[in-house]
Amino acid sequence: MNRPLIIAAVGVLVVVLAIGLNYFSKQPKAPDESVSVEPPVTAGSTPAEPTATQSVQPPTFDVVRVGPLGDTVMAGRAEPGSKVFIMEGDTSIGEVIADERGEWVFVPETPLPPGTRRLGLEMRIEGRPPVQSDRLVEMILPERGKDIAGRPTTGASQALVRKVPRRGFGPTHVMQMPSEMGDALALSIDVIDYDDAGRLSIGGKAPPGSTIQLYLNNDLLGRAITGPDGRWWITPERRVEPNVYTLRADQIDDEGKVVARVAIPFARSEPLAGLGEDTVVVVQPGNSLWWIARNTYGSGPAYTVIYEANRDQIKDPDLIYPGQVFALPATN
Image 1 (cartoon, rainbow, N blue to C red):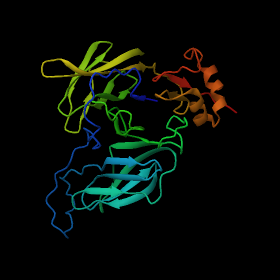
Image 2 (cartoon, rainbow, N blue to C red):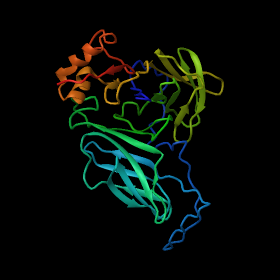
Image 3 (cartoon, rainbow, N blue to C red):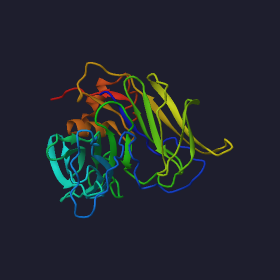
Image 4 (cartoon, rainbow, N blue to C red):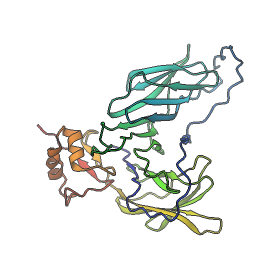
């Protein structure tokens, strides 16, 4: 597991000094997904085939929305006239043709069932090799009547949707939050991403044009200004050692005065070597040993297996923390 991911839970040690704009539903465009400028295409004409000197931009996911019952809408960009396949591993779950503006929309015929999915795109143009998307979409769809942590809820179950690099290290973009808890907050930390080398990528939201200062244990990590979509991203030069930290974001005005603040705990775990991809788990906000055991072994009471294998980290089975990495031993 080369790049553990923590989705910051709004409400965990959060200090909010100002309440502002509502959540902006328009999703951010990934910095590594550039938009190609195409020649104008008149109605009814066929887009010209790309020549060897023209760069073909990979297809992109721009919007993915999942309803409480699994009904889903996906939209993005590709070369005009190209055929776009939505892929789950090596299997296509649907296809669509990009219009003359290079835009595509896909709505699955049936709602997606509960579970975890990892989707990519493959663009096909006649006479050219297929082109894959640079980024994948990961979806966690909860069971009916439960949240994504497996806990019973009387509200509508909301999915978590995030966009991640297909390979290598880069920022993770949250496309849909599992709840609307943070909608009223003017400032939030939504994603903390790190790799085994301690490189960080942190993102969140704030009113457009805001200046954000990010601190780790009161040490300045970096500054950013939110874009028109209300999103900010900071990739600090500093690398962090395994430890437990407090991550704080301040929104400041033109005079340098703090007008909003949010703080959350952040644990960077020791990299684990010599273990297969399916033998460790990184604790996320809202996880419990019971939930991890139920999803790993199919039985909540099997949490004792995880507890016994990680007693050096788990002092109390009812208290586990985001960022902890637990070994998942094989069982009969």
